[in-house]
Image (cartoon, rainbow, N blue to C red; front, top):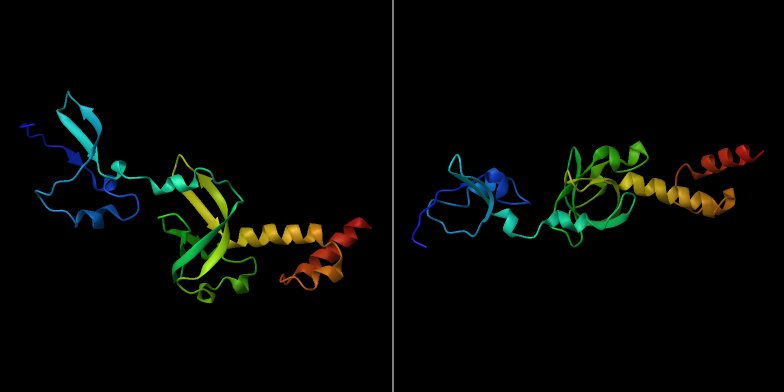
Length: 178
C-alpha cells in the first residue's frame, strides 16, 4: 500500500532477448513496471526483482526439441563470423558459425545467404539448463548425405543428388563390401 521499498533490478533480469545494458536505457527513474520478486535477504534488508521473469521465456521453444532435429530458420543477418538466424515461431536470434554453414569448405561463404531467406538447419547441441543451443547447416547436410547413401547405395542412383563427393563415398562403400 503506502510503503516505499527499494529493490534491485539487475540489467540481466530486464529481458530475455536483448542486451541488458541496451534495454536499461529504455527506462528512467520513476517509471512504473511490474516485476517478480526473485530473492529476499531479510538479514541484509535487500530484495532482488526481475522484469523478464514476468514474460514468457523464448528459450521454452526448444524444450520439446532434440539434437539432430531439423528446424526451419529465417536469416536475420550475415557477418564475417557466420549467420544470425531466428527459428520460426521463436523470438531468439541465434548464430550459425561459419564452420557450421556447409560440409564443403568452399561453400562456407556466408555471402551465399541473404537476410529474410528461410533455410533448414539441424540442432547440433542443446542444453536447456545452461540455455545453450548450437545450430548447424553442415550437420543437416551430413544427416541427409548419410540417408542418401543408405537409400541409394548404387553409384548411378547418386549421380543426381546434390552432394559433390557422393560418387567417391559410394566407391569407398563398394570397396568395403568386397
